[in-house]
Image (cartoon, rainbow over all chains, first blue to last red; front, side, top):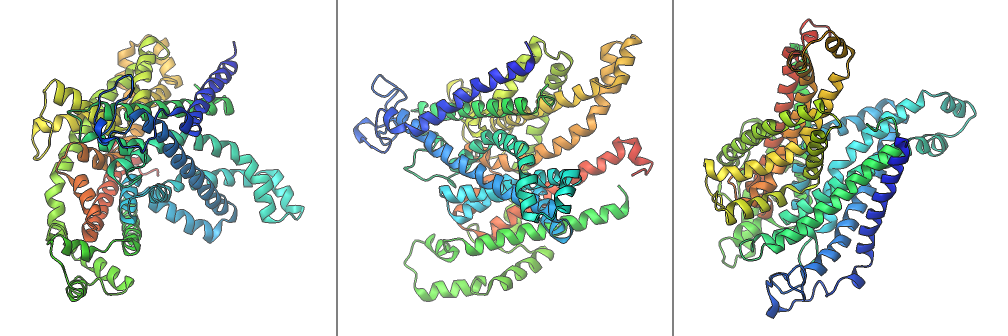
Length: 273
Length: 313
């Protein structure tokens, strides 16, 4: 059996799991047994049982329901973050690579500056300073993560610019925008998409980390990092509060990482080991 | 690295510091929440408008943005980073207080990480595509997908609360309190680094001179120690520098989990208190630390790679 066939099989298998997670997020209202915001104080901090499979938190809210809704929060945050950094980063990179000259120098100096600094530290400072909420957490991570795509987009564009078909388009009198849109972008898109897919797992974790610190999602939003933070205070009496949200992150991140890797393998069989 | 190059690098570092501090400064300027009110709220009394205005003028917060920024920057160049609102002491002193905690933790985590990932990565590469390799790769894959703060909470629960091997709450810097945060950080870093060690060693093992040495009958362990590891060393040092960059951020989260008295915990509190000068100082410190480490990495190249020593580059 060729390794590409195997890679394709794995890719579709992981795609199935990814769709399953997306399904959980989309159909949360139908899948969750309880309302994730519904506080029943009499049922505070109950251990996992038949009624509440994953137990209840301090306010008596059902943990399973909150984890299912948490998939919604996490995926919505992560996908918007990845979309923003991919589009903005690639745009800047392609522009710098194609224009060259001063534009290139200035943009790349900014990128170098950002890369010469541990991003997550800056993200914590930015998110905290802007005030903890979901949008600011996304902005903070976007501000420190777009550079990777700018670098990538630039180097891919530089490579393409040497090619004959671009020279042909230029001699034909195509406008720069047309060349960028019709010739450059379609050729660099696969690499960008694969990189973005492989980034999803990391971004889920970093967003959860910001929420854990209190600089992301705010109560009562069901979000895994925030749930871990709330569960931390009851670690002695209610360990299930920190076990399940963390396990949810682990499973979802693992699936997205596997999916990203397998996508790379089928798009670029040479790089697969 | 030659003198001229070094000067160039230092200049670049200064420009980066300038840019990063300008960015954080503007964010603080634009951010909601008033540090003056936060400062006076601590006293828990009702404050009049005049007091607020007075304090604001005292702290120089009524001046326009560029005046505030350049006043601050000029201070930094003279070694004065301003006063921390929340700690009521100079920012530099507050940073010095928290620095040892973080440095000790970062150092011990890095050493532990190397002790885990060097042997694992080398074994994984040597026994490529055999059960041991799959096992190590599987574990490191899981490790990469686990949020470090969750690993910390699990360790805290199992080793601290259930088995009672280590004290759970931080407070001061001591060996037994350091074990759990060290382990947590080391696990998170080792997961990534083991893969990188494996790749670097595999790359070297694939070289033709290795095949030649094996054909001539050199034992594998000799080839490994004499040829593969010294050559794999260079990329691994660069990657180690990157890992330490991650560590400086990761340490903030882990210090919160274990209430470890370090820079990270201090920074999170400073952000919550809107203690702008302290946050600024923290970001600047981390930038200096990180860039310093990367500079050391590059300088170490000159000594480790004889090709660079001769001045070919």
